[in-house]
Image 1 (cartoon, helix red, strand yellow):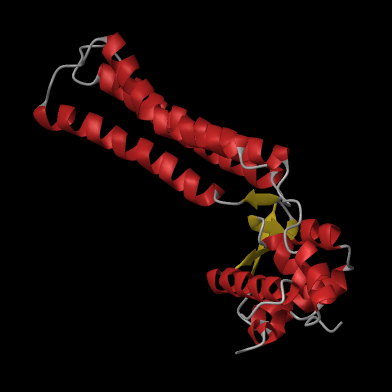
Image 2: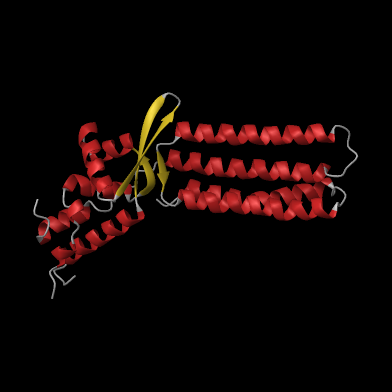
Length: 100
Length: 150
């Protein structure tokens, strides 16, 4: 029998990264500032964690402009969405103390 | 944080389904955009259909004006959306593509046979009914997006 913690995704083990991905899971795409305000982190923390999630293939970052203002958009990749769901399923199994 | 104890896992689970980042305002903007694009496209197709093969003076000019108006609305609405929104609510892209795509396909399905067969222009009321039918999928998609899932 395998303990459910083996199903946890290392890339989502940080509470900040987990919160970013959980927030992005509610939308198709969101502007950088919206995610920053929702997760209550600074620009630099979100930027660093988003880059980590992008390297892990969980988040996709899109840069653009609206008028002269630069805007950055974040979204979950389809792989990222399924990895988040797997991570949440593992957490649920831990809480319910059942095998994963 | 050791996230493999039941208590820690429970804390993370509680944070795993936060309130949606999408606001009602974003949903309304996306919904109006899809509905406006569909209504304008269907109205242009309906007008083109109504004056097709008719002996209306300035027919070509009216047709060209309608096409330019359609282009102006498309650009204006997309620009307005880009400036107004901060999120794309869940499934908005898919619903928008399906709605606008279905309206576009209906426009082609209704107008192409008339052009190819060289039929005379239908009565105005027929063109209005055709435009309403063509706009319907896009408008329905717009309403679905604007209402969204709370």
